[in-house]
Length: 142
Image 1 (cartoon, helix red, strand yellow):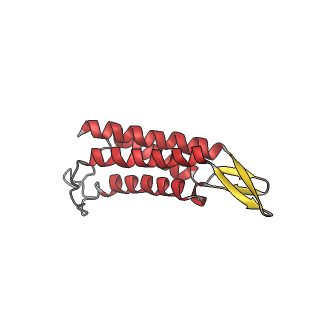
Image 2 (spheres, helix red, strand yellow):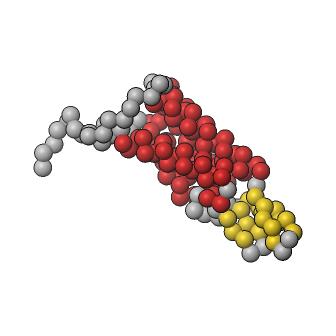
Image 3 (cartoon, one colour):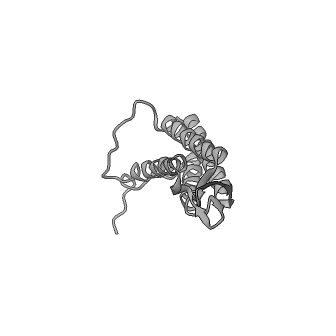
């Protein structure tokens, strides 16, 4: 097999490792139950703030993986990628924090029921904090 250092993907920086680990954790946590009540279980995808926060994390993961592909040239953003990750990590954390603080509710039999936060919401918030920290570290690298 042909090996070329010119085509070999560069190693992940410490900040990128934090972003990848936190982003993957957030995507996986998004599938867990975030809020539940009488006969109702809802994950991160049931509410726009948390769903958008997970999509933002996915975009961060996508950029980190695509920049390593030798035949893909991403457009240069107006800010360095580290700053882009800082902004996106903060956005993801902000959206998920809003969802965590606002919570969720449903209507059951014509009566509004406030759902209780579950483990998925707590873990998702921690993973989003990791994304924001990884973005902060990335901004300091550039």
